[in-house]
Amino acid sequence: MKIRMTEAQDRKTIPITGMDCPSCIVNIEKELKKLKGVKEAQGNYIMEKVVVTYDPNEIDVPAIEKKIEHLGCRISYKRYPSMKERIRSWMKHGK
Picture 1 (cartoon, rainbow, N blue to C red):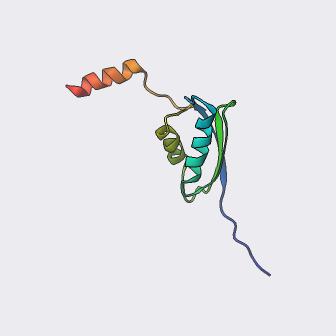
Picture 2 (cartoon, one colour):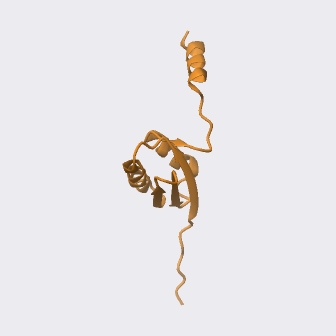
Picture 3 (cartoon, rainbow, N blue to C red):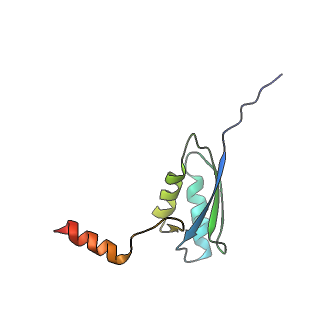
C-alpha cells in the first residue's frame, strides 16, 4: 500500500484596485506564479480580484499582497495613507 503525501494548500481571494487595463491582471497572474509556494493564480479584471492557491508552509498572504502592491496595485481591504497623510508624515520626518 502506497501512502501519498499531499501538499498543504490554501486558497485566498484578493480584491485588487488600481488596474489600468486587462493586461494588468495577466501580469499579476504571471508574477504571482513565479513566487515560491504559489501553485496557481487566476485573476479577473472585471471583478477586480485574483484567486491564489498557495502552500502556507512556503509563502504567506502578506508576501503575496506585497508582490501585488509592488506591481502597482492596491489590495481593497487594506487601508493606505491618503495624500494628505503622506505629505504630513514627510513634513514631520523630513525636517
